[in-house]
Image 1 (cartoon, rainbow, N blue to C red):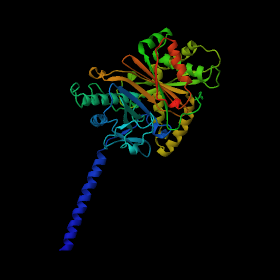
Image 2: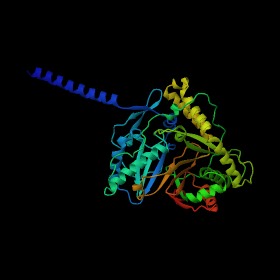
Image 3: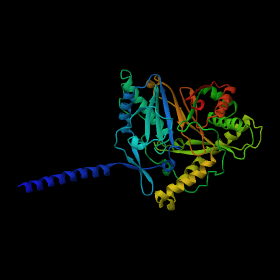
Image 4: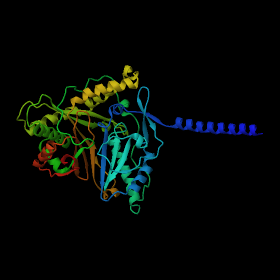
Length: 449
């Protein structure tokens, strides 16, 4: 009898194990997966502790942040954003996304410098994090997930939900729901709009690299400049250029005057300017969808005026930011991904090749200035928001970057840098001040330690 009972028990155990295995298999089969977009394929290859490919978008509220409510807000909105509910997996030929069934990342008080490496194993395997400091909420995103446009949509919805929890007596309506008109499109707009037949669009000549004493390892210098939009409009209009052209031109001139000391240079100053492609293709994708154009200035004399430099930069940007040229850039990038020989190569080999190619191409850029545009919020929430800022992490060969965003009539130009010297930043803001723009500066103090 004992032996028979033992057999029955063993049979029941086997059935229970089989059921658990079936559930585990079924759960694995039901997990959604997705391809990385054309731009995103590069980021996992080159990312490391020093080159994180993580950007930060922050919002400053008029009151201190409640961590518990911010965590609850994140828990409520994350299930509605499939793009952010992904983890990165390594396949045989490509990296890919897989649905992440873990709880939302833990909201923490700010504990590292902006754009620090995201250790996914310590972040519930998510590729973004949410931190806070006093009145500020920070969203930091690994660029493979989405670009600044996608990150901004997520941050705005997080803030809306947080404020509804913080002020339920005023903002009870639309509880737990994403705003009407927000698209959750996951299409790869690069592939969708790709056209065959396109010339090579990128220059590979080496550009000037900004060098100098670095800030302490593991730190980053950040300097925000708050500028009235109406004054910037008047200043840029006086030169016959757009605000974006004016800001990029001033940045390039500051490098020429305050870094090169107006001396000729063997290498050109080449500033990368990412362009949001969504308006050009009527796209609403939450994935990356941007193209890179470049403003190039070759210092050959010692006496260039600001007007001369600005004219060169503005002309360069104007000629490149056209539907035809952006179409060429986008299609050229996608064509490389579609080459059968590249697709057939195992990922281990792809990684090695891509790192070498990126290492060479990175030398062709001095700095980046990106503009995520004017940020608009719904009326009931505006009273609780002071401003927005954005920060880019460093890239190979680029030790300084600029980020632009505006809200409620104030444009914020943010310098992120790993160089101790602030001559370029000071020269940039000084020129704006000379042109009649009121400048208010805020820094994290790293460059003055």
